[in-house]
Image (spheres, chains in turn blue, yellow):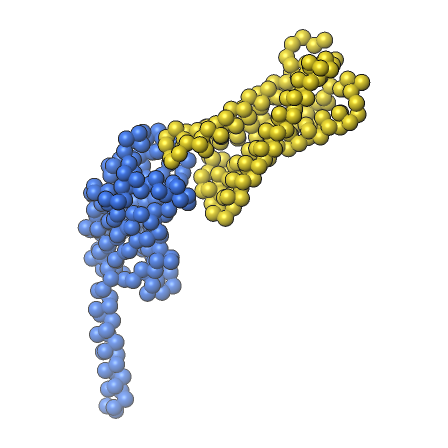
Length: 187
Length: 178
């Protein structure tokens, strides 16, 4: 065996040794391509708001999707409805009470393969100091070099006390809210 | 003197009442501070009224194009007839332009219109933060011009009725034709 071939083999082993822990570590998300939005209906008019700041930690191995873990932390004051005055109101006590509860989180507890190549995700969603077990279908796909996680999570806003007092009236703002997310990794 | 046709008279007064209601709601709702359920309700009602006015304006224009207006009194000066035609044309333009500008302002703000809370109206443009203040200003200016036109229109009608006593206002009032 010649020296260059030993070197080559050594280099290959080294590459695997570096790659293995990298696989187990959390994927890096690309904030520019990722988004978390909430869609609700006000007198039947669909309104979409965007959480401009959030971080997602996702451990995902295509070979073992059921071993995946996700941890998402949303910066509540970054909620943007497209109007500064409306944004200010959304952070008040009756709605998000962002001063007291600036973070909303989602922590996955299990992932199961479901029909159509999707994954059924269950986990704990916490908003405004209230936690609830939620489950939703997750789509995982590859786009170029990055991994894309997409899904819609329907929630009931009143279960999280979002909209108190006169805002409990669901004829004004419907109870059902759709949280839509798209998380794109950088590698 | 001949009157307008019954549909023309009905459309005229119906649109007048709806515009007055939309205008009153509009100036009231924008003065409500913060976001309250009442304010959101008024905004929705205001938009529904606007869509209704736009729909009726289409019907009215079609009716007007197919049914001639009764002639003015023969002794009405030519310049007054011209001025009346000009003002009417401008008001016709505005009963379209005012609701359309409001509709696009709402779309630019990212709030589509759902007529009567039941029928989603077409989303013709995406939400646009740059366009939003421009359309807001346009909606305001067009309304100011419409208000000025209506004041002139009402004053002219009253002048014809009480000073000239020439029956011009009666052409647009319900009643037995004379």
